[in-house]
Length: 386
Image 1 (cartoon, helix red, strand yellow):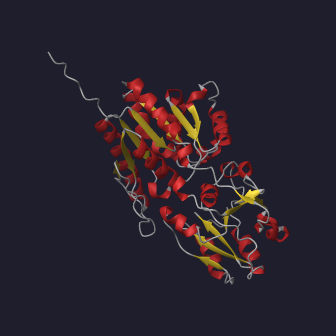
Image 2 (cartoon, helix red, strand yellow):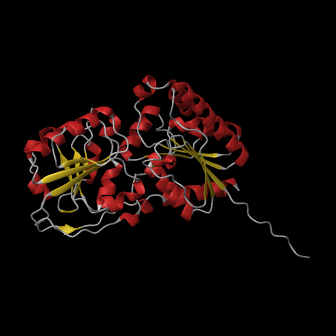
Image 3 (tube, helix red, strand yellow):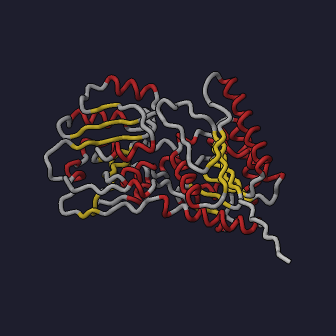
């Protein structure tokens, strides 16, 4: 008499990312990695991107993505879309009944938290792109404050909590008084690009030519050293140029760039994340110019540091970003150099540019080196749910 073998049911990983994925490359990178390596069926709910004229629609292979709402238009319309998103996410969870749920940031949390209350055996995971100070929760949108209050009461039921670096993670644990929880729940997931970005550049530092600086990312006036960089470049028009790629730019920054007389500064509009390698290969130095406007920034290392490095660019970062000093290096190239953007006239950029007698050392910072930790956790949790 034969024994009938039952086919093992494919497990599901449900990901909730309130903000449009196209605006958050680290989330897309994680989904790309898991969709290639993991055996789980991946289901994602996010919102529609209102900037599709600048950014291509993210459509990964073997991933089901729902985009029920759009976060633009009059305030009442946006609030209705908030409600529709959360309701859609909750009903999709009930429909797909996944054993694992991962959400990004507090703003994505409500459907996952409510589902966990109903399906108590659910493995609940959260990753925070940013660190939010307690006072900012208190001063921020009521919806986020309310959701964070629920989060705080449920952290003990999570199987995974991660931040982008150990300093942010430790401050978060102190804020939320989570030191008594098992250390195995807490993880660090840096925002690294894929290995496919790795570009080896020849040492051309001795050639007599203008050095090409580039800035990529959201650009603000008050929170960045934009004016200082513009004024400094005005003094060195024959030696340095700067191209800026920003799909998200505030009005004051636009006005300042429009008024700048520097012919060596160009605003190039926005650029798609997946086009960055072919753009960055044309530059020598990548800028990271944040001011110390929040604890989040002070204790940050920008995604762009790793993206510039992967594409062979030196990195000049603001001295105000204290955690980024962990990655500073000047004995090999590409270099990672702290710069006081408030005192650029004292900056020896000729020395910073020089690579004389330096050896090339490829960047080791790629997501293939960190995301296996996520995959291993998913596999372990799936086994426990069997």
